[in-house]
Length: 262
Length: 297
Image 1 (cartoon, helix red, strand yellow):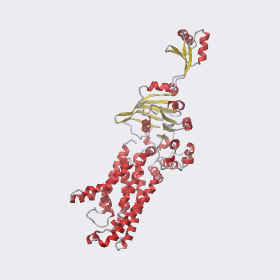
Image 2 (cartoon, helix red, strand yellow):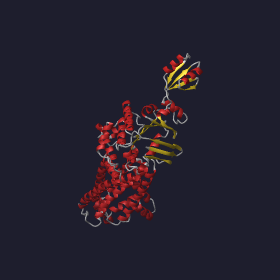
Image 3 (cartoon, each protein chain N blue to C red):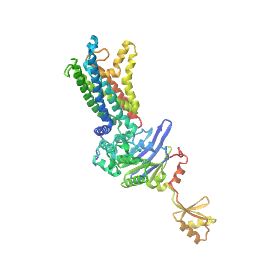
Image 4 (cartoon, chains in turn green, cyan):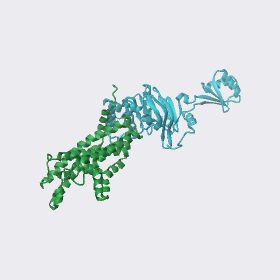
């Protein structure tokens, strides 16, 4: 055997095999698409059916793109679980020791996991986002509410949906590496993304509204909007804030992963 | 070659490995012997950099483990019974490991054949028996054809056939000139497997010696009412002997030799017995005060 070296590319190739050889990956991908597209369609249908009863203001504020992509927020659960599992099952099974024997440079191992997960989450996220968009716009078109992918801001919002889900997966990977237990990590992710917004609700009005905008879910999903709203940051600003949170969690994850005993 | 110097690991208030100095050399099976909780597994994790040493250092082939260009090609380790994901097959487990270290895919089939897992290689590992899991761990250790192998309690839970298989494997690996480092709390196992011994108790290295030097040599115990006369006769034959507990211990000869000698010289003999000190005895003497957990499994 020629002496070949262990490289980052090798670590990525290994992680690529690893992620495809457990059933949870395909299940997460499949359920992400089903949940996001299904719920987006259902919500759009509900809106279209009740459109006649809506007031003028509500009709004016209607953002067919953001509304049509509302189901993506539920992809948080399925892709979040996938992101957590990529790390946490290695700790629970004892595989982490084998993995680190093969790739003892810990940042390299975690980075390889992040790269593989990001690619998969991006593909699944984009498929989900585009499918949800076309399904919901088809429903809205029945009421002449639909928009096209070529309309201003639309392609950005739909592509952004895929990017948002990618960040969700990465932030979950970070949580998995920090918490190291599947249930604990999933609870933390869902807590931050679904429960934290409640915090803003109880703050005095102005404050609450501002804080709310900067909380993870609102900041992240700002990229889905095509109209200015008082409750979200502008799309890229919001996305930037959420990317900042993701980076922060990943930095903490890398530091702890390098430092701790396995 | 594995070299530890001043290797220390402290967990909270417990010192698991305490200023350990040892060297594991190629060409011989080195047994790492100690009671449960003595620090064997911790020391092995420190070798692989899985746990960070509190102080001191350990190198493999002169380098820190994490600095090895292709670690699996230099060190193969079986750390615990289960270090794989139950949802993945043996074949996939080995395939991803091979990819990380640039090991050809053909080698995966080779090691599956060596450990006898080829028939179940495509099945998910969660259905494997303890012995099959152990074989998968050994396949992973052999994957990179490494010059150093570490096995932590490899015979735990195996049937006699499996134990024999692992023993032969370790001995043949050592015979090929590899460094084989195997931990166990089973002295009987060490006695038949290892050629060199590193004994650890409460994190301290108590002995680092060839097996033959660790176990006192076999001898003949003789009791006689004429002990002094017997001693002089034995000395006249140039046999090595020493007095202990009112008996004479004679080395390098058989009971027949001693009996015949006594008869020729008209010396009465009251006891004449062969003594074969065991690894157990030598070990118990050494670790009498460093056993942390008594009884149990």
